Length: 258
Image (cartoon, rainbow, N blue to C red; front, side):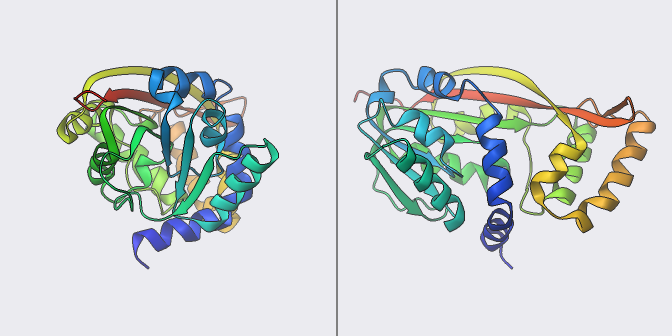
């Protein structure tokens, strides 16, 4: 199974539970992405790895058009249903690989992606593709969970994530995300960070695979009891295993005049 097949297999199974999580993870998704896009929010947008279309549906009312792009048919079906329920008629749905976007150079005013970069086999290529399809002066807004800047903590965090979901590749530290955007050619980077509290059992329930998560639960509890935080505050409170996901949003512009 190649990596794109692994992603589609995983998110086909997770479609229902992931949709609920994606809807509830950020009450300010419209303000967060729309505000970061600025004037570009009124133009032609692409939502890369759109999942169930939460960001797509939040941005579409103000945009001239939105292309909802994802590798998984079941996720696109969720996105279509969400946009149809909202009466949105300016959304196009396309399936494909974020590392090889099937669009012309300079086709969009804005590009967004949320909670997806850590699933890409080559995140730098995906960032560079977003840069390519943006018009000069276009804006990209990327939001994802990040790992610790400490190498050992980052490795441990990502090992836990991969055991839970084999389509996970690597959550990057913030410094790598910033350098990756700059390497792609983006300028005028602006960032924001916030933490989201999680409970292990709630997090496990999204993947819908009890046989997989049972041994991970044992390992994670042992780590928490041993004081290994994995850079995510892993601990035990009132018998429950808890941690946090640290979110990082980065806004950047493609140089030039639109």
